Image (cartoon, rainbow, N blue to C red):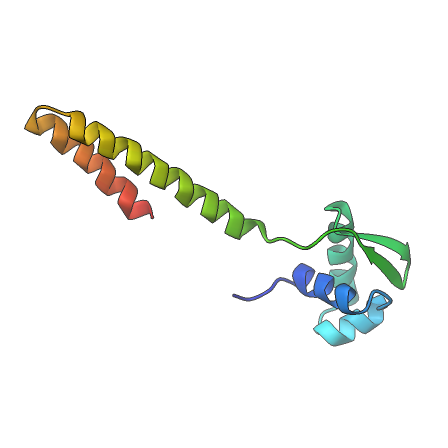
Length: 111
């Protein structure tokens, strides 16, 4: 998975908190505006704090939100499937089982 500029900048600050913006530009291969924007976003998100223009303090570990979102989504779908399976077993008619089975199939496709 390709890392974002923000994540790369964060990792650079972890390795060397006294990295200047110009050094970060050269190391990451992006322009100064991108570095400044990423640094601002890291600061706003609470990952870093700027002491001076050339020094930062790391406040918390960097997390990617996409992985946790997809993980949470799959946990919810799995729980829904478990509930539907219980409901499937309780159905007495074929038509009712067929309807619940369709719902289960749709949820399985989302996983």
